[in-house]
Image (tube, rainbow, N blue to C red):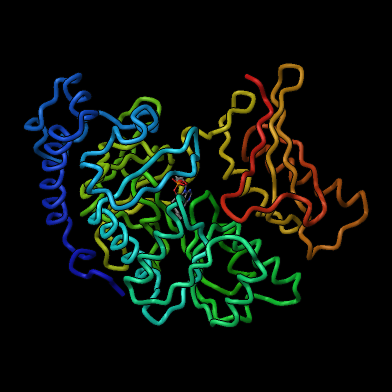
Length: 431
Ligand code: DLL
């Protein structure tokens, strides 16, 4: 199923022509209407006429979170405030929150992008979508809301929290699709079990999960607990909000190339990487009016794929986000992505989904402790068995991460739960 079949299946050459045309217009606009970009271009001696083809993008400067912070609140805007119809502010994955403005057209492009995504995961106008992302300054709730309504599906704007009510309405209204963070979906499934119910007995069939890193193992666990098909959704507030999803092939998330131009770079050197190479996702917005971004450093680590997808879509794909270039933990000199820790823990069936990584420095050496819950379905109470399980987890972590982690196994339900983005790292180190 397609939302916009002509665009979604457009031959790559034609898509590139659109991109080239839009890129030239973007650079012109940025130079003429954004004092921030004019200054940057002048510093580098770039004139809009130097940017003719897609290859020329490499000549352009990067834009980073610090630029948004330094130009807060309106310094990055390229239109007068009278044309701004909405503000959102980022959840501040790193550093201070950043403000984003939208024109009417920006809101439409955002909704259209997510519509294409929702339809590509099989959502139709017949679906009832429970939107359990936060409504408000966070982009998740309203982003899904506009797209759901544009498709003609029924939106249930429940936002986050009040889990008992979430489950009650899911049942009563015959909800068929849900959008929330993967950690909240797990929490909801667990909550239902405690109520003596199972989400498997509802009409829920599709879940669209994102806004935080998650893994294939978490996908499996969600699917096992709920009986639904789980899809990944990615986006950032600076780019609009939730924008890109997997299709039913589930082999990467489609990036709508008529609106966004992507590159993957080496986060250290800024050099462009090739297809299949792991690096930082950099996005140039081709349609955004209020706050156009040139070579936006997302900080997210992924791999790009430009081969046509077997679903028929020609737009490039990114693979599941592997972590952030800037939340990468360095433990005793070893680079560790929190997603790797989750990956290992989830492969051990005796362990539950909830964990916390605690970093400390003892006698000038980094110490990593991972508290993880026992899987409530597993009956282990003999101390020797717990010790054995702890050793197994530690060995596995050491072999994958290349650094020792001290594993503490705790009782089910003792680690803090989150309704929004889970916070799984406590870094007590003072460096
Ligand atoms: O989280 C937008 C969003 C809302 C995406 C709802 C998906 C669903 P921010 O608060 O600006 O925006 O945070 C963006 O969250 O740079 C990633 O590091 C992380 N992130 C978002 N989606 C995923 C995902 C929203 N599917 C930051 N996998 C991004 C891993 C994700 N990380």
